[in-house]
Amino acid sequence: MEVRHLRYFVAVAEELHFSRAAERLNITPPSLSHGIAALETMLGARLFVRRTKSAVALTQAGKRFFEEACNALRHFEHAELAGRQAARGEIGTIEVGYMHAASCSAFVPQSISAFCNSSPGVNFQLHQMDTFNQMKALLEGSIDVAFIRKPQRYPSGLGGFLISRHPFWAAVPKNHPLAAQSRISRSSLDNEKFIALTLEKEAGFWGNLTAVTSPGSSPQVVHRAPDSFSVLTLVGAGLGISIVSEPLRRIDIPGVVYRRIVGASRQSEFAVSYRNNESGTAVKAYIDLLRTMRER
Image 1: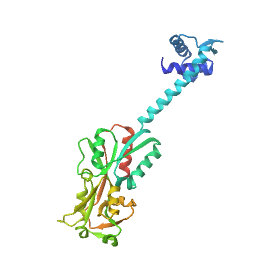
Image 2 (image 1 turned 90 degrees about the horizontal axis):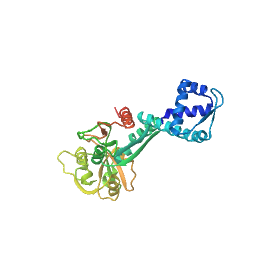
Image 3 (image 1 turned 120 degrees about the vertical axis):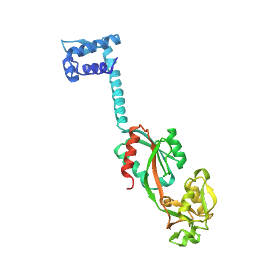
Image 4 (image 1 turned 180 degrees about the horizontal axis):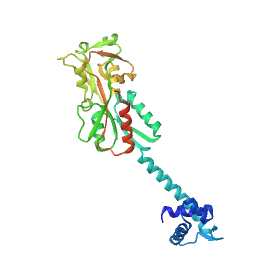
């Protein structure tokens, strides 16, 4: 039994007339009659009785089959539509990895909002991860798009592009002498005690310190924490200061103030990364949107 047999049957059952049903289906009456006869043979039951040459009535078996045939056609048409929408990238799920700093910037939520406005059938699942684990998850296929610190190079199989740059800020305990300054110079940080992420998550932190301290200085890390919120909590406890990219200063932690660092040798860079061989239509469409939105 093919879908066309169901469509033939439903058309005749609704019209109760072979000629009108054939015209509706844009086929010849003999083709329609042959299709209905084949369906009756497959089912082993008569579905119609003739009233005139073209007019028919449903048998009891036909009446029962009509309900099921309509349901089957609705399911088929829904599946067909879903398949076409998926092929166009209009439905599906995109798994997104992100860093805290990327989430605090406007770029990530704005890009998701813009994509959902044009493709409301696409769902986003978010996963907070550090840069290294995001790239690993991309290669393993557990996420589709990663918002990361821009690496010096992407691992084999991955690509990416810069989406934004942000100046560095110092997260300082509110009672710290540096909190009284509106801006902080590089040299004023040379002898400070710093709080950093744990060793396995601190990729880029020493580079950040080098960018905001004087050449030749030896910054001292006195405490480590597993994530940005924990780092800032230790800063609020007065245990040291930390270096953050500008978006993270949106995090309001009691006891923490943020001060702009002037004279830094570089800025914090965020990138989006993805698989080079990505085949998902929705994922590729989202990546294309990110390209158009990135900072020029």
